[in-house]
Length: 297
Image (tube, rainbow, N blue to C red):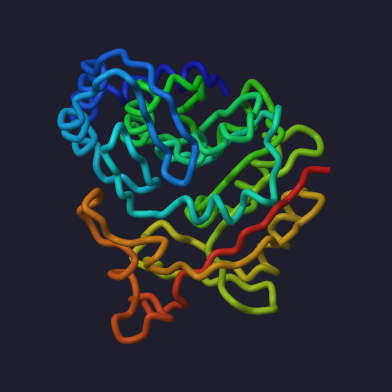
């Protein structure tokens, strides 16, 4: 697979009529190098003056903002997801110091900016979204962290020019119609002894079963399988992983996912049965996530 040819083709996405104005807006910003603080709210600060009103205008051109939150020179971007809750849940379980780290489905880079606190050797994000890369580039324009953002997907990971010590794949697996193939791609992207931190929708149950939504799950059309933890473990075994460790399970609540002024669309409260919040609008079990660590032997 010729990744450079794919990169060249996807660079043209930045010329799309809905994306080009975003790129021009980023280029119009002053070349101020800001200090990035990789805390719960990823923040930018500078001794130089920044036109926050203009920054907000540009940031709102890039809506919806899904992952965060961010504070850009006093502009608070209250994203749909409180991604700090997920990150802080996982952080006690990993060590990124001097490691090569990949984030699959990195969105706007919130988790990658958080990784910097643990001094990784390199951070690479994979996400084929021109909009989310533009959000990332807005922050990186000031932060200048050196994080690499690739407009590539998990299917390109086996062919990538280098392998990783740690891969994060958070909220992606259920979007793939062949989850075992995706897990195999993750394994191929690892160094020997490398580890993947994975989170995905799960259903309760002791048997190795998976829910197969007919049209949508929680109003998400591209959710194909929602497994029990045992089914997820079996998928990982089929993919060749050596170990499977459950780090925890968490029910998604409005504390973590909710509609804000930065998305202008529906969110969790619209995805659940108004008469029974334990079910989705389709009648399936409400969103619950399993967090696991799997390793390559």
